[in-house]
Image (cartoon, rainbow, N blue to C red; front, side):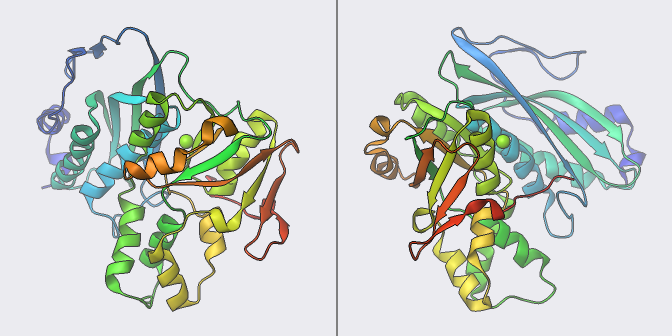
Length: 337
Ligand SMILES: [Mg+2]
């Protein structure tokens, strides 16, 4: 059976039946012209959207529909985390080619539903349109942030410490493994871990929530979607500052080291330019940065201090592992066009 054999309304009803998590703030969900929801008191609403297009952002030959559904949500959730928010409501627009099997959409919705249950937000509506050839999806996600407590990119000051969660480069290496025409060397289990980091990234909502709860007073934040140096550059540009990064403090996984070594691959481009890590990159005044790493670790959340904000606007200095100072601007990130 193909999607074109189902009518639009039958398709919508089918997909709707998959959605489990509906918050008590929702007064009207799917099935009317608009959804209606009641924001909590003392919060600001935040909103973001992100689209994924087949052949541009994903290849249906290498990712399952369930994982694609989860990832579609994760990339949006990561933007909510980067603002210090809590996700609440999502609208999903699907571009469906007539020959796509309805089973695909069923599984895709299962993946989105898993994310909605795990992270506690509700899918409240959207649109379904015909797409002549390729599948695409756009998610608009709304969230809540505490008044005067949300993060932005523009507050970093010279002397601030720079932090990043998790580890960098895994996702780019996972993608490399998927795209490689011949099998890479190294244990299959290790390769699978890296592929999972690419296909099933963790939005750092818990970490962002911790920073808000303990009033860490984040001065600037962004999620690493296009590569560490490129995303750091956004903070520097918006804040009118520069940065110095210590290469040996940038967190990387043992899995990345293992596969790079086994295949004689350079780590640096993956770590500095590799995109889609969805880690949280943020800055704090030094007096608020004390013990932060150990407080994160106590809660099982890896965090690393990787550098310092400087006054040289837009300049990124890289202190290499052998103590040399390099210009970090040679590392480019993901180019959307
Ligand atoms: Mg972002």
